[in-house]
Length: 195
Image 1 (spheres, helix red, strand yellow):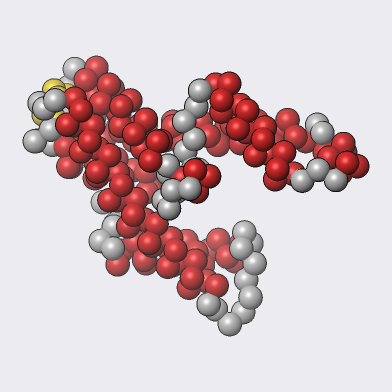
Image 2 (cartoon, rainbow, N blue to C red):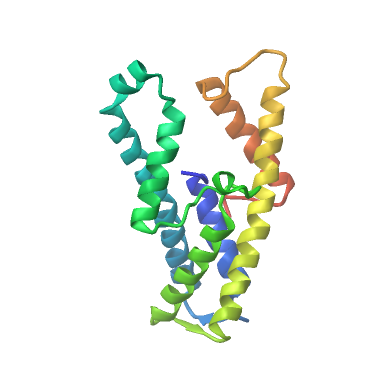
């Protein structure tokens, strides 16, 4: 997943905090958080499942690609792009679309449309403002929170890379150190995923 699960939970809570009471009204904010968290997680999981499907597909052609000298990364990108077009999926990864953040602007916008629709369907939630105004507030909150997350992630990566010992990215040691530094950096930006 592009974002850690505990960060998705934090993100959902923060979005709902920004929406209540000015944008939406509810006696059960935890229901709004649950709707938001579930939607974001499902949207991010969809791309993970797509990536797994592409990997499985390319595994069948691994011998052919080796014989012909075809780059795995190029084939992966082409196969994924083809499936995205066929299924009309909005690409989640911002880095693939040239955005600086982990999530693309298009994906954030797509999630905001779906989230407003879900909130409107809920019996426990009443949308108080114009739907587009609520959607724009969701996009704004999403973007601001993700910018802090991106800075924390970058700082954590820089800390691990600056260590005297060369630690290969993707190794267990890298993951442990990155997770620790990532949590520390998030707290510097006022992000506490436990709240």
